[in-house]
Image 1 (cartoon, rainbow, N blue to C red):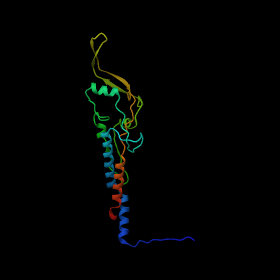
Image 2 (cartoon, one colour):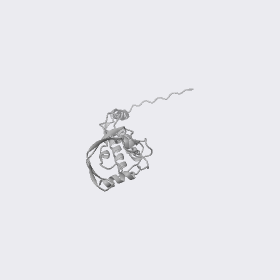
Image 3 (cartoon, rainbow, N blue to C red):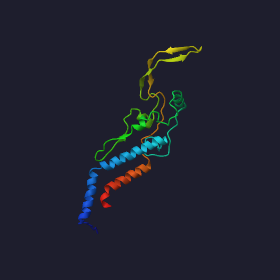
Image 4 (cartoon, helix red, strand yellow):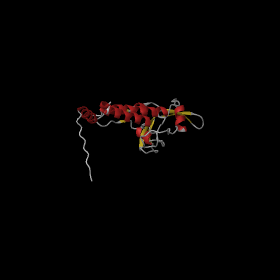
Length: 194
């Protein structure tokens, strides 16, 4: 025999609290700003740790470090006086470009507008992005017999990228950051119930 249960709330206080939750759900901007800042914090920590990701393509952070710099890259840095900077830290542009958008009522975007960011996040094969024209400055070279000669400045087309680039996911969020984001959303929505 089917039974029916009905509940009628007559408490003005409870109705007001439910109304407060409903109203906050319509405009989540404040909670989303906090979430965006928490994601940026996680990404900045990824740069400092030189990788904290689970698998390529996942936004969930883990314990995998970025692949070491190749011996060629290390040699180029040494030869050009750029030292032994951390991975993805040569100029700091990529790390410093991570920003958040202004939130809508229900979303926020965290990312970068640098053209080469995708290549570092997901990796790339040599020449995957076609070719680019590179300007070579005037420089000196030594011939086989030891004489120095000048090579005039010129242009050449080179593959972009010039060699395979391993994926080094930097846009990942560590589990502790996700927990804080969830806690902040709960606190925001349930503020009137405390």
